[in-house]
Image (cartoon, rainbow, N blue to C red; front, side, top):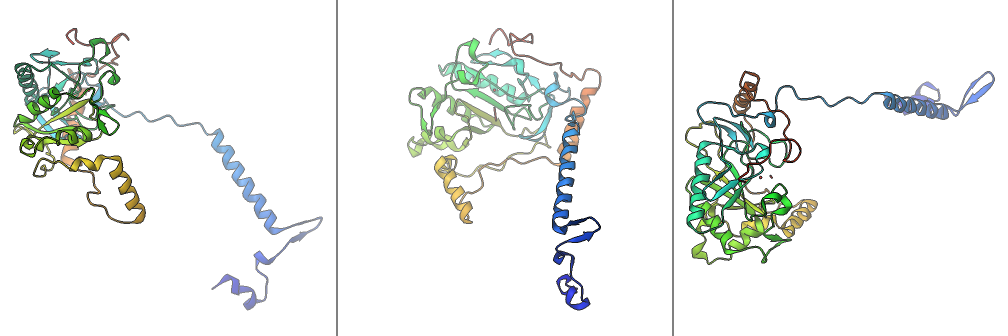
Length: 351
C-alpha cells in the first residue's frame, strides 16, 4: 500500500506532514528533531573512529621468497609461469665469466635454471669472440624464484635475465641512473645507440633456446629500419615497457619441467609495426575510444602473461615451506655494500 495514499484512506495526516509535535513546556519541529538526531549519531561515530586504535598490518606467516638464501636441492624443475612460479634446483651464476659479469650480487638475484646458467656462459664466450665489450648481467632470479620484493613481476622461475646495454664504472652500478638510456623521450638516443648494441642483440636472438628478448618499443622501431631481408632475427625481439637501458632475455621452458607454463606462441613475421601500440599517441587513441565506447584494434596489450594455477600454487607452496626445515636457508636482512651487508663480488637487474 502506498504510504502517501494512507491519509486519504484513514483520515490522518502522515508524519512528514506534521509541522510540529507539542508537549508541555516546549514545541519542537519534527524535521528539526530528526536532523539533530542524525547529526548527533554522526558525531558520535566520528568520535569513535578517532578513538579506535589503528590496526597494525598483519605480517605474512612463514618465510617469504626474498628471505631465502639458498636454493632448494633437487632435480632442476621450473614450476608455473615466468610471472607466477618458482624453481627447484637453481644454480648460482658466477660473479664473472668469459665475456660477462654479474652485478648487484648483494640482492641475491643471481640464481638460474642450469639451462640459463649455461646459456649465459656460452653467450659471454660468443660476445668475447665477436670482439664486443663484455656484458653486465643484472637480475636473474631468487634462490627459489617466486615474486621479488621490488623491481619485477617476472624473473620468477630462473629463465629470465637482464643484460645492460652500457658499462658504467664499477662503483656506480648499484644505481639504475648510471646506465645510460638508448631512448630519448620517444626517439632513439643517437649519442648512445651504436652498432654494437645491434650485434649483441643479434647474438642473443641467434640461440635456439631463447624464446623472447624484450626491449623498449623505440629500440624495436629503430631495429626495424633495417632492410626487410635482414630482419628475420627480430621475430624474437619484442617491445615492452621500460627496457631502454637493458634488454631482457627469456629462455623457453626446459624439457625437464612439465609444469612450466610457456607463453603464447609469437606471431609470425618480424613484428615490425606492432611496437607502435606502446607509443603515447596510441595510448591517447585508446583512451579516446574507451570514452566514446568504441572498440580499438589491438586494445589488449600484446604478450600478456598467464597467471597461477592450483597445481602451481600447491607445488610452489611446498618449495617455499621447505625453508622451515634444517638447511632451508632463511636469510637474514641483507644490505647494500657499505651498509654492513654482504657486498658485491670483487670482480664485479627491474619489471
